[in-house]
Image (cartoon, rainbow, N blue to C red; front, side, top):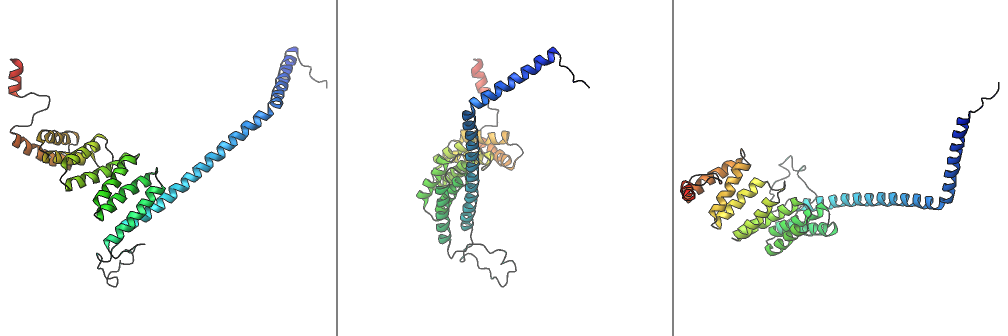
Length: 273
């Protein structure tokens, strides 16, 4: 059987394909060096990325272990506080932990060292930032208040996450209240309300802000904050408590609740005149 003869069109197409393949292979041969270099760079980048990811994952795991260990020290039982007789308590074995201390001071000294180590070794990690906050709490328990303030302020300044910042701000605000510095407490709670997070509910921060405003004598602003709770967090237990505070302050200030936009009768008469 005779072979099929190609038409002129098919011959032109075949020549075009052959020409393209020849040109492509020629380009590859001429640029082989650059292709190999580019391929090598891609492989190198992939290996570096994999190594960095593996390193970060190992650092995350190490940070979690170190933080958990420090937290266990922070919550460890103290013999002087625990008078349970293991022989009479069937659950005593289940309640045993890795650490146990003879005094509360010993417990918090150990937790302080552990949290500071985690904070230093894993700075930039969320658990490192959280460790700075817990180091501040440990110092509070040790009654080293000035050092606690410095540690907590570092947690506020250096943390990238709002949660840690607001937890530290709340602890600083509580220290300020204990010292009678309600103006500073107001400033800190204002920061929390302005930059809220799940660590401290906004309605709770608003309630504490309003109460400290009252102590400083700023009843008008306190009333505004209480009203803010009732309007923005209606139905919550905090809103119920805030409504009671609204009535009390309105009684003190000698007026009834009015929408902020609505002028009083006197103000309306003055506007009309």
